[in-house]
Image 1 (cartoon, rainbow, N blue to C red):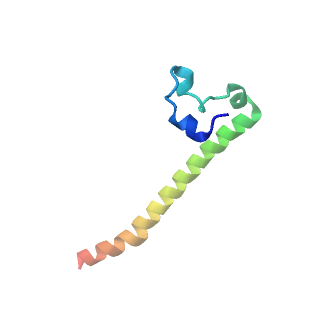
Image 2: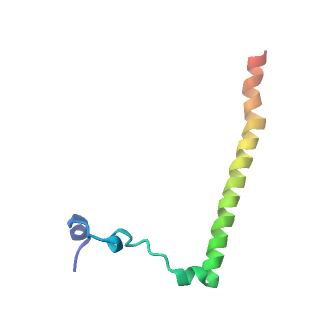
Image 3: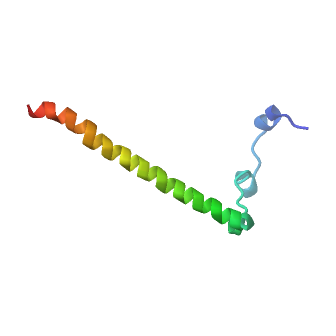
Length: 74
C-alpha cells in the first residue's frame, strides 16, 4: 500500500483522466432532487452574500465616509 509520501513523490500520471482525478461530476446526482436542491442552495447563498456585501458597503458610505469628508469641507 502506498503512503502519502510515495504518492506525492512519484511523477504525475499521463492523460486526461489523471488531470481530472478528484474533480469528476456525477451527472446523476446533479439531476436528482438532492442535486437540484444543492444547486439552488448555492445560488441563494451567492445572492445572500452579495446582498450582505452591498449593504455593508452602503452603510460604510453613508455612515463612515461622510464623517471623513466633513473635515475636508471645513
